[in-house]
Length: 314
Image 1 (cartoon, rainbow, N blue to C red):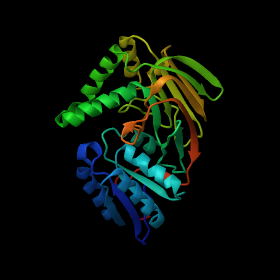
Image 2 (image 1 turned 90 degrees about the vertical axis):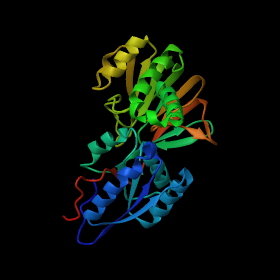
Image 3 (image 1 turned 180 degrees about the vertical axis):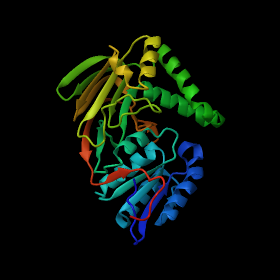
């Protein structure tokens, strides 16, 4: 929640990602901007033209402002957090959600009453590092993300039925064994090895458009929640996914959970990882690796949502 303003005007700089949610960010931003102006905030805005431009703008704003906003999706917010951590930013990061999924919104809302410095997840592969706010996952989420992305890129008019497309992709991925991950997972002092359909290392409770998959996860905590789903029959998998709407999936025998400050994955063959809604890429291609390690980093900044309505007076 944005702090209440005093008689002295408060300044905020906002980076808008115009490509989030297929361009719908441009429709949402004017509402956010008007709310800020009505609340008495001085608004400096920038519409990014590329990821590199987005990153450079975040770095520039971090030197000029104590309050920085991001208008876009989960991945936009994560990119901003990466750059702010590198610059040792000590201020407030405000998320103006306008993406397609925004699972992070539910987590941020739960912490907005008592804002405090957050933790970032730190994912490391053989040659890559990625910081994240929400979660890293392997298996089904990666395959569905990949296929849905390709379908919508080719047929953008299908965006209103993204959920249906995702369901079909889940079925096809399972039938073709495309979601299968053979992995050894070391979470703190626990160790397990099996065939999995889903592996999630999370800092937030929700995943895949609102499923309460990791109810104990928090970016305010120094430990991850690790939730895995062993490979099983298609109908059983669908029951598990449906039960995750209210956290009931944790009662299934195929589902395991644990908490750990550090997590290591050893995969039987190179696989991609999805981080906060996007498959990790380098040089335009998916990063494929057999070994991943994860830890947590404490930041110096807080994370909040804009108040509704925003208030400019104490």
